[in-house]
Image (spheres, rainbow, N blue to C red):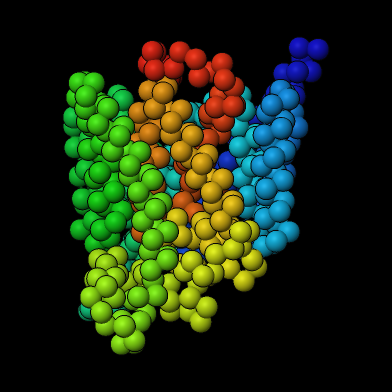
Length: 399
């Protein structure tokens, strides 16, 4: 019986890690100049692999109920919009039970880092994407910015940011001051190549935020950081909704329909956001503005634009977006109680980043590291016994 159980566990965990590896490879291919003609089939394969892991894992009644409820949400989304993303995510989260998610995220980190370095190396030899891109980026002039094989300078700096945030989570606790200095130097170096401000500034924020937790031991500092973190997460969501609701002012100002001081204010805000608000009104239906939001979205809502929080509501609908946001806030509250400060910093950083960029709101599971945190903690969150005594003991992780 023990031998049979070990064989089952090998199949279960083998299926899970193979699914994660394929998901990461799809992210790397997406960032390269390559075209993936079998992407849809690979999504089906990873779903099947996570399903195998789920079927071979034991759950209690409450866990089964939670999985069923979220699968029902995903099924409604699929039948209404044709998108299977939520079903795939739920199956991934269910499969995470009993998996060493620290080990899993280390795998994601090193695979992503290796893949990005490989793409950059190929670009120096003229293979794949080019080294730089010269065009008008909507900032008033023609510019040359480096891409290093990743198609767009923002994509390059985005991957540097994502790897920085993941490295801070996995290894920041062990770093000395020079580790943080090196992370800052790497981000600064790439910023001079890409001139991508959002990814750079949020990465700098994450580095300093983590450093404050690491080196300043005063309790009041940690309390202030926690309060600021919660405000930033909720503020980023509220601000994004506000932008979607008021985007029409930019259109009206551009066409001189409304030249009031209020419209001028939103035009100025659009300039600060480098034209992202205006992009919401550039399509016929004004895709992404609040007028296109539905309870469960619709098949026509397939437009691509920056600003992740707005894309979340637009692509998936108000109800799925609210469910995700509530799950995110509960996760953050649990991490605060558990004193997993590095997880909190990851959540805050990715939330702030989603105001401007949509890297984490995509069809690729391995882009959104918050999903890995949810996979790590969701069974604990729904178990009231796990909440007892939290805050009295520091998190003890093997990294």
